[in-house]
Length: 147
Image (tube, rainbow, N blue to C red; front, side, top):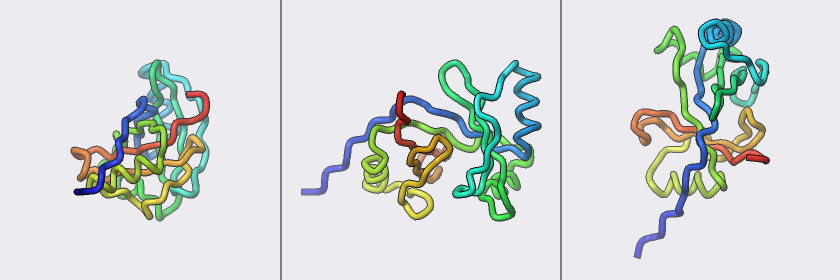
């Protein structure tokens, strides 16, 4: 008999990641167009070679992502999408290691080393390659405290 595939259920949509050339310019656009307010100001996330900021929406967040340094992976995205755009969708999961194991067992490619790393919310995250998820880069994150 084959090995059982671990069960994994997606939790709530935590955020939609939006790559941008300039977080400051993108924030100004969201303020002007939608009356949005930054809930967490721009800060560096050196481990992922990006800077991020968050805008709260009624049921989720927008994560604005800007390259940090010449070797940022966001440069590749912006080369293909010079104006920026939707980069990823992030869902919460109860157990990040079990989620990673489920993705691998189902044949998906977990990006990087495959080991969870600490994301912008201060909890472990993984990214699943878009070729395995209908063309969408999926971030899975451990459910933060209080959610």
